Image (tube, rainbow, N blue to C red; front, top):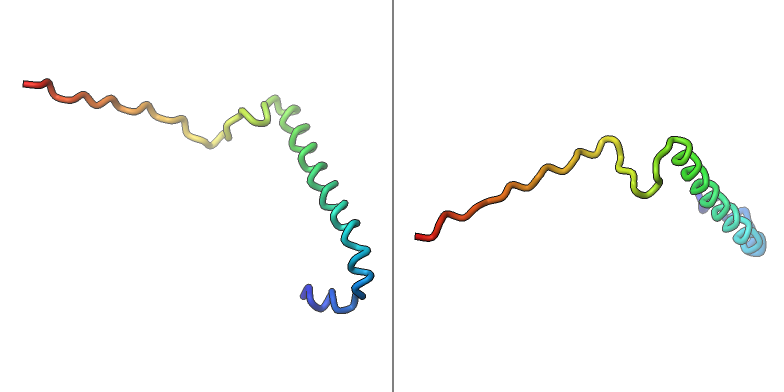
Length: 70
């Protein structure tokens, strides 16, 4: 489908659209990051250090003792 869309555009038009598309993507990524940060702060969680709620707590590893030397 993308090929059909690109066929109707001249190469000059495509070149002029690339900076605009890159700018739109960069602004979208930045806005998403800001939104995630604001929601995290609003919910009282630290963004990087908070574990997901569905993560099970790690169980203690059992200590295996070797039998006494005879």
